[in-house]
Image 1 (cartoon, rainbow, N blue to C red):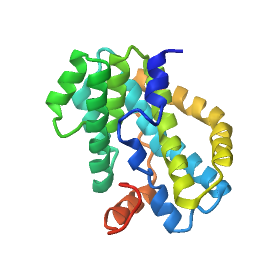
Image 2: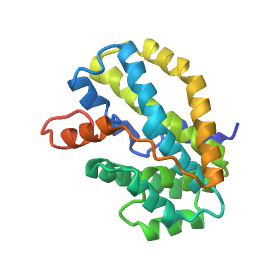
Image 3: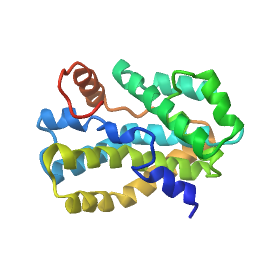
Image 4: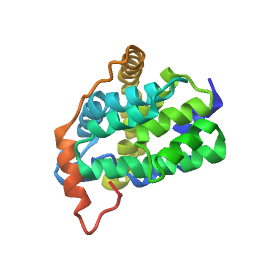
Length: 218
């Protein structure tokens, strides 16, 4: 396994993801997540909607001949919530900053120049994967994993869930993660990017952005 894959999947990589719950904080407040079973349901839904879309965008951006401008526009079109668009670009900017330090590469410089305030996070992730020597399939796997790991980790803090049980939830999702990543990579290779969405997550993002007191940025 490529070491860069492990570095990027590590929550300690300074890309800012630890400050975001991926909609979990709002879902907890709404009562939709309150134990490991409801967490598993939330993560499964997130994986097969926004996770699939992000994984396909990341895989497409990891191709050597990727049209990054078109992919960033595609990501924007697939992110209807203004709050989520802002979050995605903020995370993309933070990821790109860390990536340019870790794996200097002209493609990262070009993306930064084109989007000084931040490209969408899946596009930045795929471009980072390319710079780090990873394949589009590995980029898809990273994006799929990120789509569930961040919210799962957030729920340990939000609800005081047993971290061992949360880890077990993620482990049971492994076959779905592999299938989703493979589906996303195949779609990117065909040039038919999915546009799966989760309207409730969009609503949660807008509500969450208006809170005066919150533990996570999104």
